[in-house]
Length: 327
Image (cartoon, rainbow, N blue to C red):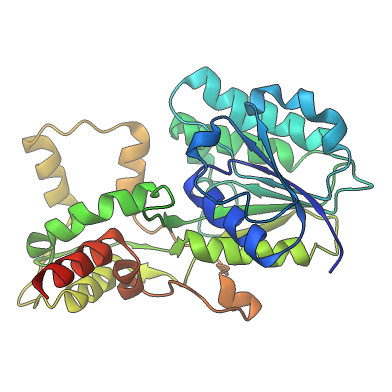
């Protein structure tokens, strides 16, 4: 295993925590972690030597031009939500700038994190994402469009996570995992419903295993590589069935949540829907070709099923605490 210099942005986020922890524990590579607020990084980065903390905003990426010219692997996870100018500045302008600062003769792989929301079912750019997506989604669309047209840059591996789970007391929760307790809270009502829809999901621990593998196995081609991160697709109804089975909630009868009924609910409760929300409601099947997870590379998968989602979630933690109190 050759010694590598690895530059990581977004280390303090949910996915970033899992990836940095994996790289610290499973490799001896020298790490350079770019973080805006070191206090948000809960990983024990002092566990071994060779882990360097760089306190800065990616907007200041030019400060690290000399370092970037000597980097062997760049893992670009950092992203921004909220402020429109910040979103496009960080997610597009400065990300492209960082890529251009890497030396094609030295850097063997750029691992760039996008989102599966900008792709269609054939893994091609989804035009609607670029037209009516949220600021975040449109920025990711724009960045991917520009990255695909860059010349004379290191090999580029673009990762497109589907629905991401993850988080615990030592790592920040993903948006999906944060909302999972609310879903479980209302499962008594949800179990009576059926809906047409399907999706993929993946746990941040499994993303970290894939990324660690890619660090050790750089691409052999300079062609842009696109990998959809996710387990095999699951229908909404399958997910409801598996959650109910895990929670010992019987399903007696289910009513079809048809499009017309959804429209009635939206109208009655005066639910405000942006153009992208409306598109997602009508699109329904966010599925992709050949999703990748640790099993793809003959590695153990941490969270392959819907039942595993609950086993690895805050619900499992709360359930465990209740059992301890009772005992």
